[in-house]
Structures are given as structure tokens and as C-alpha cells.
Length: 433
Image (cartoon, rainbow, N blue to C red; front, side, top):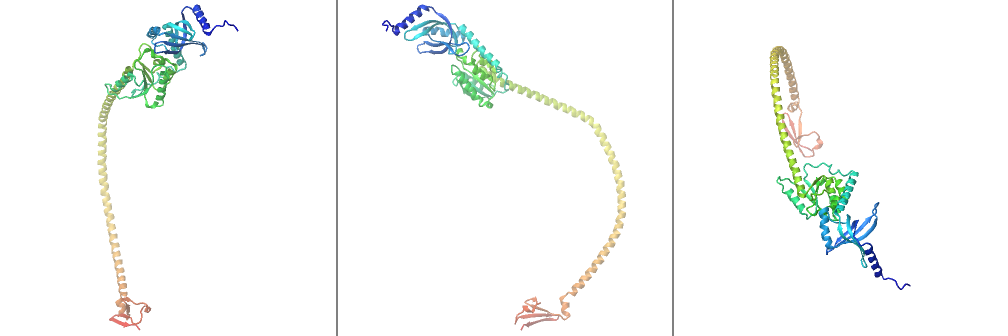
């Protein structure tokens, strides 16, 4: 065994010394920030990576630190130039020195940053997303949707506590014209790492009730220009492109257009500007309705005047024709009257002759009917007399009564009963034996 073996500390101390002697200067490097944390003391801790050009595999990784004294200067400088803040997923060009510590290992100390590189890199990434959306044929889909003439049912994607949402809502509700809007908030995180998925979730919730809304408004009340990265993401912008309702943005920035602004149906600068735009849409529709109403009224008046003129012309044309027709009809009626009068006289004469002949025949038939009736009456009178019971009794017949009824069967009379016999000259009572 070698009694001259180094301790771990001694070895790492030599590594530290060798690194310091070999790389004594600062170096500009390009890397991607995979993690970024700022602690309570103001120090910024980074994890830097480099990926394979052909894929997502990581080929290098290192820890880096921006000490608080440096970070206080670098951060505002970077944001003022790039209008964005340092965040995970961003490619940066930074000036570093290599450090090695026996306890904490290898790391890089950041002393400077080149914001122009990040601007170019962000522009390159932005262009890549735009070209991808165009190659997929979706870039202009939302802008091609027909905007409703009266956008009264509004789905709003915004932070629940954002002042911009309150301003937007108040301006719509308190508009000078008294137009009525129906507004529903779909709350979402509008900045930071959670913003992209949160906004997409809100869009999915609106899509589930698509028929209940005319448009979607995406607004963000205030905030730093550096909080706009989520509005350049491919996934969010792809959702905006393909959303079935017109989408308006009022993200609250003026200097830069995000991809979300480019693919949205209508881009406006602020939430207040979105509200003004919607009120103007209502007002333009109102004016158009008034103009159409006035035009329709003029057309109706003109049509009525035209029809009156036509009627007057028709009256002037028809009056002589009607007069001629009436004259002809009057002449025809006079001729008809003369003919009827002559025919009526002839008919009366003929009827009179016919009536005399009929009267004679009727008198003859009446006398024959009366004589026939008298003969029948004489026969009935003789029959009546022949059947008279008194005449029958006078011929020597009698009628026996039992209990007031004519007795026809002697079996109906018992012994010692009184019966009465009626004769032509009187009655006789008898007792049966």
C-alpha cells in the first residue's frame, strides 16, 4: 500500500488549483436555462444545459450562480432590453468563470449577460412557432371566422383578481348607450410557468359550452412585459388558431406583438380597448339598423306613391271603358224589358184560355165527387140502422145482463144469482136455479 496516498480534500484541492491555473479568465458561453431559482437573499441559482442538435438529449450540464450583488444589476438591464425576464427554457449568452469548491464541486459564476443574443434567440423561436403554425395550415383559421354583428355573449379568460378584468367589465356594463352584454369569467393564471396550461384549460371549459357564447376575450390587466412568454408558446397559440369562436386579445402591452396577438381574430392593446371595440361594434350595428330602417321607410313611402300613381292611371283609363260598358248594359236591359213585357202578355193570354178550360173540368169533377160521397153516406146510414140494438129487440130478441155486462155463456152464472133481461118494452129480473 502506498503510504503517500492523498486525502479526498487534498485531491479536490489540487483539482481546484489546476482549474484556477488552467482557466484563470472569464468566458462567454451559450447555454439553455433549465432551472432558475432566486432565494431570499437575492442570489440567483441556475442549472444550465446544452442539448444535442438533432434531439432533446442533454449533452452537458452545469450549475451556475449569479450572486445577489450582480443579479441586482443584470436583471433590470436584461428586462429593459429584451422586455422579458430570465426564465427556464430560455437560451442565453452569459459571461462566466469556472469555479471548483472542495465541498460543493464544480459551478459557474455569472458576471455578465448579452441581452441581444436572447432577443435574437427569442425572435428565432417565435419565428419557428409562426412557421410551424403556417405549415400546419392553422395560422389564419381564427381570423377567418365571421365576427358576429352583435357580440353580446362574451366568455372572458382573465385572472379573477386582475384590475384589467374589472375595468373591462365596468366599461361594458356602464356604457353610455345602455347596450346590454352578458359576461362570464373563466379564470386563469395569466403569467408565469402555469399560465400556458391554465389558459388552455379555460379555453377547453368554454369549448364545452360553445353555443352559449358569441366571442372569447383574452385579457391581462397590467404586469411586466417580461411575463408574455406564455403567449408565444406553440401549444397555446395552436389552440387559439383552431378555436371555433372569434377570439380577441387585450394582453396589456404595446411594444411587442405576441404570437397569440397575431393568430387571434382581433388584437387590441388593453382590456379597456377591447371593451371600447365591443361597444363600437354594438353602436355600428345600431346605426346600421337605423339606416336600414330609414331606407326601408323611404322605400315603403315611394312604393305607396308609385301604387297610388298606378291606381290613378288605371282609374283614368277604366272610367270611359266602364261608362261604355254601363251604357251597353242599360241598352240591353231596356231591350230585355220590352221583350219580357211582350212575352208576359202572351203568356197571360194563353194562361187565361187554359184556366177557363180547366175550370169547367174542375166543376164537373167536383159535382161527381159530391154525388159519390152522398151515396156512400146513405149506405152507411142504412148499415147503422140495421145494427141498432133497439131495432133488434123490436124484432123479438132480448139481451141478458149479469153484473152489468151482456151474458154470453150461462156457465158464468152460479145458482141463486140475479140476472136482468132487457126486452123491447122493458126489463125483467130473474134468479137462477
